[in-house]
Image 1 (tube, rainbow, N blue to C red):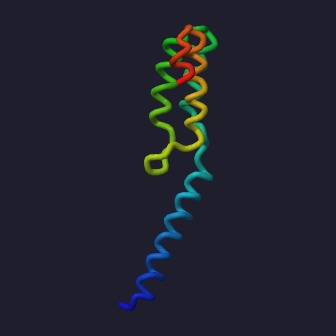
Image 2: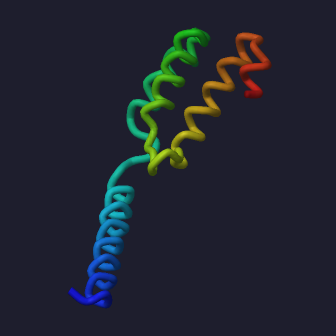
Image 3: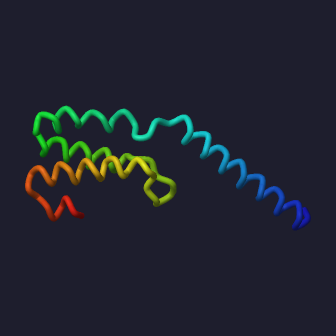
Length: 94
């Protein structure tokens, strides 16, 4: 196999991988439905339960390799909001 054919084949595989990944992200709802479940506890001022569920959900947010995707911001924001309401300002800022 020539070097040119190898490079062309490798480039084709990379392009297919990128297209498959972008097709996946277009069909997936971000954040997913699990994100909305802790809002019941949040609106009932049960911030300890809500923060636990938001943190758990944040660990299941979409990742691209080791990098977090945009939906992580939703979980982080609500986790910080729960910490703020419980007076745990240091964790809220973190």
